[in-house]
Image (cartoon, rainbow, N blue to C red):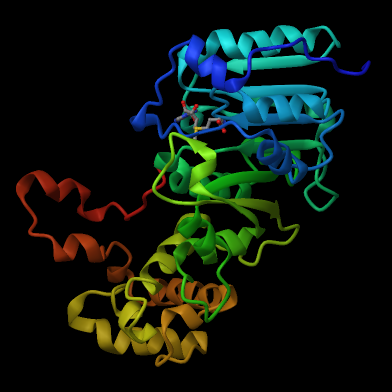
Length: 342
Ligand code: SAM
């Protein structure tokens, strides 16, 4: 590919003015206009030249430009809002002049099959180095947690983009969510998200973008987090079961973890069963949930599975449903496990 000279395009600020793009709150549209910041995000993406990159929610395209300047072989954009079509197509045309490829899908990232976006020739075996395939996005706040859990699930089963190997992600989150994703044992932000992210990846908080850098300015600062999938995940349990146990074990962060463990069992037997569970898992019942490591949760999951075999009646128990007043309309959902990915 010859050197890239993107033709002079209007600045992102002008594009917003020209296309009268009003940030839509529902789509969590907070745009980055500072090239130094978008270049810095892209620096963490990986070895972009000649790679394939997926950008989620390109908006008016500031991060997109920073990616294209690094000359990927192919850039795939998934953007829900069609109002960005003219802007993004200008960049697509400009990139053609250096024989580069930009594919644009106006779609909801939550329903896109990410496997089909990349070519099989770049795939690597799971335990090999990461493939030259990257995912980057200044994510809408409204979907960032659901999306990361959905993608961790796909990663755990080597589906979607992760059918091509250990695809690295560089994503933004509200600072507080970013803090949670990377919180270590004993840190105050430690929660379900920390355990889930750290069971399957090495999440790193790279830098903070102050709210003032966005247009319009959100109420919070934003953290840029990279996730490299682990060659050997720290749990081999089925994702939904491991997530369920993690969620229950963090149901009361400030109380002893034995209280959390009790939420896994029906009221009549919860005290002896939770004692048996933590005893089997060799976990101190008196520590707070924030002291639990991924390995602790993994052992609790193993112990829970054994208890389910011993006492099949606990399998369908649903704590949240048991605390609701169940109306006739509700009864169908009682036996469905709580799970907030889909
Ligand atoms: N990347 C741009 C930037 O940094 O200036 C825009 C970031 S803005 C926080 C989030 C973008 O994601 C918006 O362009 C919005 O339209 C888009 N978006 C929102 N929900 C989406 C979804 N479910 N799937 C794909 N894109 C979405």
